[in-house]
Image 1 (cartoon, rainbow, N blue to C red):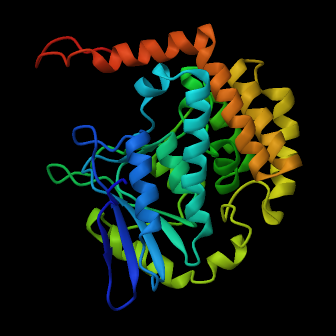
Image 2 (image 1 turned 135 degrees about the vertical axis):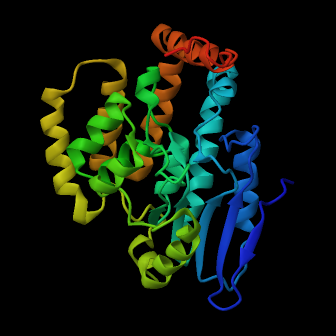
Length: 311
């Protein structure tokens, strides 16, 4: 039995905060044990909770993404089961009877943004001040296509529902994250906290203002995805435009296939396509080479002070 993450409940509002603990140095990385702990945490939420804040205990990131090293080592069947398991656990957020919000305090990439977008709201903090000046903006987005793969936990159908649909599909297909200030301008965020210290209170206030959010997702699907009635027509029009505009690469084709599946056949169909396509792309020569290059770069020692830096 996995140990739940720390869960704190405000006695006044009964809003609970679930804090993900770093599992790789100071970082939160999505791997199988971490997803197991998320599942255990969601199963152990107080029965009288009125809202959920999904937070990160890392000082540097919300969630930096999935553990590519473990994904690369899995067999075809192992990866299929792992992706399906993550889809089910993330989906538990959509079955809660109260509103949910992701409190984003740093980089939210790949699976990190996907689990955040399963929440009803996205609230982010500006980067912390450094030497009296605004800190460097952190990235938020779906970079998978840059590694010649595609999202596997709903991202193809989620990002385009939260920003301009064509921009969302294009960014997903090209693997181009945004910086947090760009994300705010694009409308990805439901609110921006005035400071890092105010992130939690801003998230709690959003939950109290959106108590009725669960009523719009009684079907157990995310509040905002491209198949919702208020988003489907615009997303379908963007999909047809991009069929002509996007290059004919494997990641582009995989993303468009998952978008089409969601629009025509529903949320679960989109998840099924993502799982199949990610597994296929991961095993392709281009996918293997791109993932290995990323792992090699990540494993390289940092340059000495004053020495040459790698791109």
